[in-house]
Amino acid sequence: MSRVAIHTLGCKLNFSESSTIVRQLEDHGFSRVDFADEADIYIINTCSVTDNADKKCRSTVKRVLKQNPEAYIVVIGCYAQLKPKEISNIPGVDMVLGAAEKFNMIAHLHSLKKEDKPLVHTKNIKETQDFVPSFSLGDRTRSFLKVQDGCDYFCSFCTIPLARGKSRNATVGETIEKARKIASKNIKEIVLTGVNIGDFGADDDYEETFYDLLVELDKIPGIERIRISSIEPNLLSNEIIDFVALSDKIVPHFHIPLQSGNDEILVKMRRKYLSALYTDRISRIKQKMPNCCIGVDVIVGFPGESEEHFLSTYQFINALDVSYLHVFPYSERNNTTAKKIPHKVSKADKMDRAERLRILSEKKKRFFYESQMGKLHKVLWEDEKHGDGSMHGFSDNYIRFESPYDSSKVNTIEELPFERINESGLAEAKLPLLNDNIL
Ligand code: SF4
Image 1 (tube, rainbow, N blue to C red):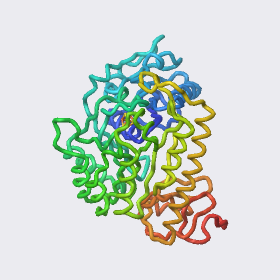
Image 2 (image 1 turned 120 degrees about the horizontal axis):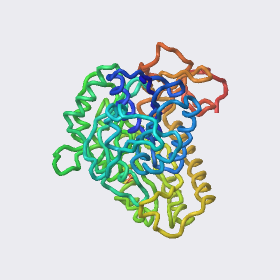
Image 3 (image 1 turned 90 degrees about the horizontal axis):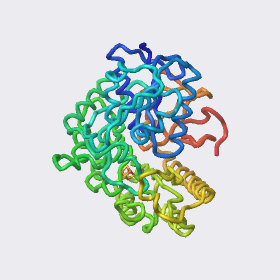
Image 4 (image 1 turned 30 degrees about the vertical axis):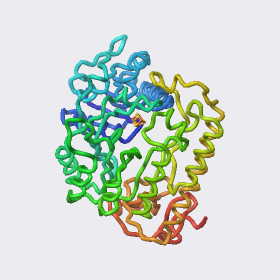
């Protein structure tokens, strides 16, 4: 019983944790195989942000059972912490491990056996206080470094604090040590991940802040780029923005959850800011870094969101100098206060609003790309050959470039002029590369 495969659903944080768990297993004699291959143990690292994520877990279990009906199946992650009983009723699951227990995988695997009911090891999330550092290696040219876990905010629609516990982190010194390890592996870019990374150091016992962490990360030799994955607008201080603007390593790219552009809805969501603060943050960023890429998360169809509320969000975002949107139709979760808010929005209206914002996102992205054409960009080429023989890479400000695959370019940073947008909507450096159709 030594071949293990892991499948990760959800966010970058899950990817960093999966990678760390697999390295622990390899250190104890397990060999990692691809999830599509025959393994003795399949681990599914779940997400529970949307209903869809729950369904994905179920379908993954079914797929694994077809692949190898004799294999053991272990389910970990947010869904496992939130709904262990529900998972233990999925036929074929042998073990469910909660938020703390997943990092004790070796000990738990030794007790694996085929029973009528799976073994469930979870504890109350309030007892989950440890911070377990993680980072991903091997799968990508970038490494996801977990710098923080948990959240103390309790937005009314969100179950993540119930799945991951209170906000916590390692010290700056300990985090830097992990970043140095990544630097020693010839990785060019570190992506800082967590649940609410701007809250780094919020614990009363800490004097250190997320800003302090950035200052120290910026000094590490060997790492060429550091990307902040996502940060709450109220935690994105002038100090941080100004530091990023002056840094050669921390790239000009922010992803800033907005969720709604309407103040009435923001209050119902229990977000910690109003729309004016968000506008102020975007203005500051663009003033300091005119070429900065800014991504925005938005939820449509939150309970009580009328067409007028939605239109005010649409107009608010339309007026913002942002580069792309991630749009999520509201998904009702158990044990959230939003569930109790009346005036639910119909599925059809949610889908319609999501579609309108997705079209706006395309326009924003196109506008941003056009504003960057004719400029030189430093592109980090990734190690994946696409079906059409192309490879992709990102500029520091998150423009996706495309080029014919060339293995010698993988994990190198090339300075290129952005000359055209191809028919896939990707940036190209020279004419003609993959096709001749100029949009
Ligand atoms: S900030 Fe809000 S949405 Fe984000 S993890 Fe915390 S509670 Fe959830």
